[in-house]
Amino acid sequence: MDNHTFVYTTYIRTTPDELWKALTDPESTRRYWGVAFESEWTTGASMVWDENGRRTVDPEQVVIEAEPGRLLSYTWHTFTPAWAEAVHLGEDVYERLSRERRSRVTYVIEPSGDTVKLTVTHGDLEPDGLMKGMIGEGWPALISSLKSLLETGEELPEPPR
Image (cartoon, rainbow, N blue to C red):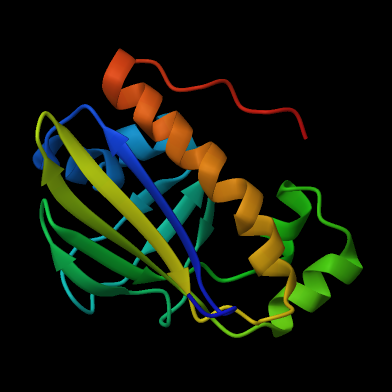
């Protein structure tokens, strides 16, 4: 992959439909991610990110592709001062992030025997941007918590900040 893209693959003992639900159902995403998504999950549909009652709405925050049980792609969220404050980012870090181009996330869901292969691709990143470094740590932890939730019924505890 080029230096504009982050890719992470894992195998989860679940079904494609259960994985799709875990990626799109607000109650599920809130458990392992702390974010509830509001969307129709159709191509072009808007996505609202709700993190503990702090809603991030932006007309460019949309679903790019959606094939239930197979593929989901959307634009990455909008950085706002309220979001930066809530996640304890310094003003200088927020300023740099807010200048980076909007990236996109794609989940490819493939049956693989008794498991499902999940490939997460986060693309269109600034080659030397802050987001690229942040997601390099964030995605593995997030997907591990998703995997734990689907396989055991319990998400992983949130790591200390």
